[in-house]
Length: 270
Image (tube, rainbow, N blue to C red; front, side, top):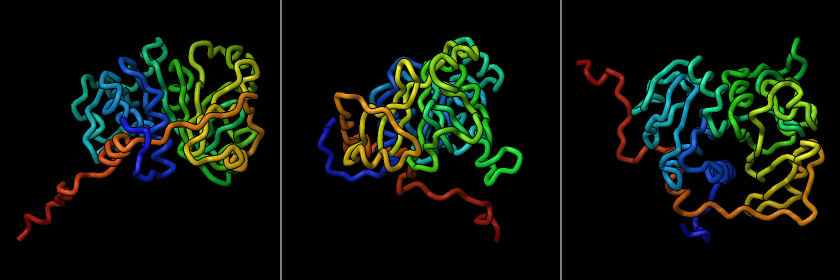
């Protein structure tokens, strides 16, 4: 791989690439749709061919077609070429038994202790915005070994305390997650278009681990609604996406030019 790419990239592409690099070969990842799934398939294509992807609908190790990644686990194409089709209850039982190395989820809000909100913005009884809810995210964050959160870095998303804890991070910090009985899984990273963030080992507060290319620490602070911890030794910059990573990623996102549009049946009418 060339580290000095001549191809420009978007913030979402940098976020997806940075997430994919955390996923190791011969592991199992429970991925949500969108960027989590895209990053998982990108890792399979580049450096982790034996990474097993699991989807919430009970789909184990599907084979994703370039340009045709599903936007929902209820789509039939989400199961294309899967090694096993089971049920949603079975998948969450596997998670609770410790079968999944990674859980990758998105977030509408995330706070200083890594708690995730995908339920409501504002008061729960009278919200300004009602969001999709948990789906399987609470189970993923509560059960998978290493939790990776991916989201766009904006002040409205990075808040001191989430309006509603849909999926538990380190709750109130310190040992509060363990005290709540969540002793197996833990958030390990928050990947955004601006940075890779982690959590302090003692306080569990969010800390800046690395910056995305061409991003400054001031950019990250300006886009965060609370004070981030910063290591005394400074913050490194992540390697930029390579040409190969961008080529594979863009091929996964967009159908090849020669792919024809799906037929509607009207073409058969006289």
